[in-house]
Length: 217
Image 1 (spheres, rainbow, N blue to C red):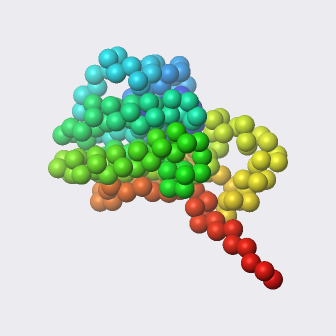
Image 2 (cartoon, rainbow, N blue to C red):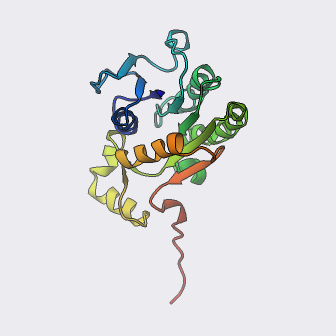
């Protein structure tokens, strides 16, 4: 199948692209950085997804994975507005089989930077809207909403011993996911899954169920 993934130069996007390549798919990547994947079945477009007039013409995409995003900087423009534009261009068409938006557990909890939470909350609503429209093609659309993931974007807290200890207190499984674990979920929701649609799947190691219940002994 023909797979288009945004944000493929590192982290979750790179892990997803590598998994699909391993499974024998043709993968197209869009990222502001140079390609970090070398594979004969991989085509890389170096550009900003907000440059709508420069987006390449790629016909017949079967799976679209909107992974590119930012945190605490142009969040709504990149995480939401550009995601919508990419989806309308490549995803809402007769060849589509599945669309997956990489959201965030913060969309459910509100526990992060204001614009980031707002942008990811918008992704949740847009996912449902898109799911209704691509259903006529027999396609699914969901969002995958991770909690903490071990990526370069999060190194500022991963490498801070004090902050990391505090984070682990809020994570029942006492660890964060690897990018490869999130990639497995992405593959499942787009290739294996054929019936779940319009849903936001939280994969956060139990952060959202942490209750911090305090009572007198």
